[in-house]
Every structure is written in structure tokens, then in C-alpha cells.
Length: 126
Image (tube, rainbow, N blue to C red):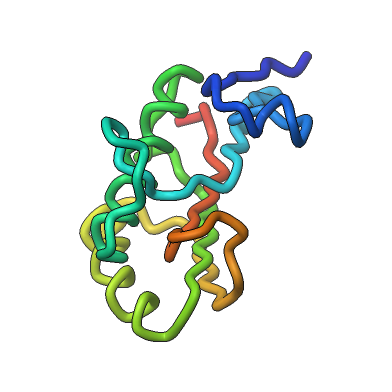
């Protein structure tokens, strides 16, 4: 049975998706952008956006009974090479001991002002 976790953002209903889905021992967290959690505005800095993405993802994982320590796959989408270079050390800080697989893609992100979007697959198994 799949358990769906919602963040309560309008795009979930509009686009018909859940923020996270728990399927057995696997947790799939949707691509998450780095809006400031208080103001709702994207910081100019890709590093801050990445930190906001990871904090929001960790919150979703905690609601599913896990944390970033349970990550097995990390997919990172950035808008340019400068953002990729800025975000890579943040990923290293967070995942240095965890070591999930990682893909970093340069692409267009549909949210105006977003420089980073991160998607995580995690496991509830130890």
C-alpha cells in the first residue's frame, strides 16, 4: 500500500502529485525547489537554495519516518554551470558519510527564480 505525503502547496493539486510517496520500504520525494520557508521567495544564491531544498526534503522524509541519512538516490537539477559548482560542495557536506548515488543535470527549471531543484529516493530499511 502506498502512503502519500502532501506539503500543502497549490501545485500538488494543480499538477496531481504528492510531495512524497512511501511504497513499501522506499520513499520517493518529488523534486523540491529552494524557496525560503518563511518568505516563499527564492534566495539569489544557489547555495542557499540548495540548503532550503535539502531542509524541505529532510522534513518530508521525517514525516515518512526517515531522514536524509536514508537517501539512496539524489538527483540535482541546476540552471547553469555556476549553480552546479556552487551546489556541489553543499551536497558533499550533507552526503559525505551517506554516499547516495548522484546525478546532476543542467536544465531549465519551470519556477521563475529557481536555480536548484533536488529529488531524493530513500529507504526506510537500515
